[in-house]
Amino acid sequence: MRLSRYFLPVLKENPAEAQIVSHRLMLRAGMIRQAQAGIYSWLPLGFKVLRKLENIVHEEQIRAGHIPMLMPTLQSADLWRKSGRYDAYGPEMLRITDRHDREMLFGPTNEEMITDIVANYVTSYKALPLTLYHVQWKFRDEVRPRFGVMRGREFLMKDGYNFDLTKEDALHAYNRHLVSYLRTYERMGLQAIPMRADSGPIGGDYTHEFLVLADTGESEVFYDSAITDLSFGDRKIDYDDHAQCQAVLEEFTSRYARTDETHDEAVFNEIPEERRRVARGIEVGQIFYFGTEYSEKLGAMVQGEDGQRVPLHMGSHGIGVSRLIGAIIEASHDDKGIIWPEGVTPFHCGIVNLKQGDDEADAACDKLYAALTALGLEPLYDDRSERAGGKFATMDLIGLPWRITVGPRGLKNGVVELTSRKTGESVELSPEEAVRKVAEIYAPHHPHLAREEPMAGRSFHTWL
Ligand code: P5A
Image (cartoon, rainbow, N blue to C red):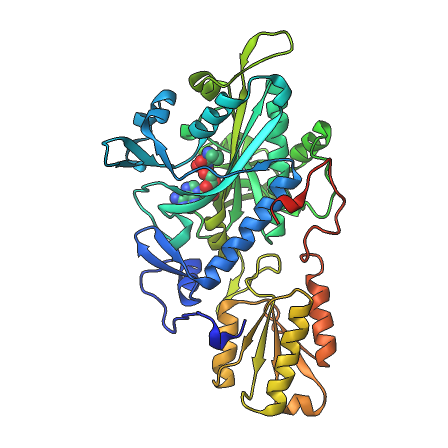
């Protein structure tokens, strides 16, 4: 993309309404614009990051054997009366009436709707195990929408629902989700710690929240610092292997890590003092196993092997896709702006032309642009006739991990400059070497999956 033809409305001043750094930077970098309290338009740069996150979510869900679909945002009140949650949900639910006086609502979550679908189509245990999910906008009329996309009223969530014959199978689905979430967050450049949580209005005995540590997080968290040494890395997981998923879950949940809702001071105090941490965290996901409650209320029953009709064991699992952008920025920025992790950056590399209009500099930039594009990378070329300082400030603000700077003086010596946004370090390279280096840096992220081993009949191409 050429910046002169893009829509990137960056702000020079700090917007007064933004209290935390991620909100401030998203507004300044022209990623979002508030439409109403807690409701945002996604401007091109923000939309690009949102889609990148969504794509990672899909790839990891499909890898785990879960099936994508799409349910509507508007739901019928009657469906929610069946589960008893229409009244229980309270003022957080946005209730709407259509022209025929039919009561509807903007879905805050989809347990009822998906259970109704499964109840209507699945009649035999042979269709199980089954996990369906979608990525769809939700609405929760939060009392205090704040911090930009972090606590919105309209927000994008990936929500998945597993249907299993037995509790044991449903707990495997729970473990499988925990494992796939670890991998998902790590690909986004985040460390999200699974913490034992409180189940709230979704209900159930088993639940973990995933928290990204950040001073501006809304939750108080208590944990054993040993947990931050863990990383998922590039381990290969067979998601059908119960024992393997269970082992990873145990590895990542055996250390003390809880939110204030489930915190137990006595147990916490048994951890050696130097490893005890009290901090704040941003909740970027939550998983639940809640048994047969919804299945019984909405009639999701199947015939088991013995011919008896039994209600399905269910769980639900959510990732706050739009919130994640705020969380990533909270975890990765400096005083000049955002620093995107390579896995989620909106453009792979910036190209800054120090002397727009100089034939040689223009030609070198065009060549770099073409070479990067031919490799399947997306450069953002600042081809405006602005001073260098302004161009650098914009690139630093929007946070692309790598920048190639091209100027007549360097070109005389056959070099351009490749600069890391994170460290600020620059190296002089020939344009060809710079392209090769950028391609090498992104090789693990791009193209994501073509090179990986196929898994049990699952095709990544269903989404890509
Ligand atoms: C699990 C999926 C659920 O709703 N039902 C379907 C279950 N869980 S949850 O924890 O309530 O939400 C899942 C994730 O969504 C994000 N989230 C929000 N993001 C932005 N603004 C909000 N107001 C908001 N509310 C929830 C969180 O990341 C949460 O973990």
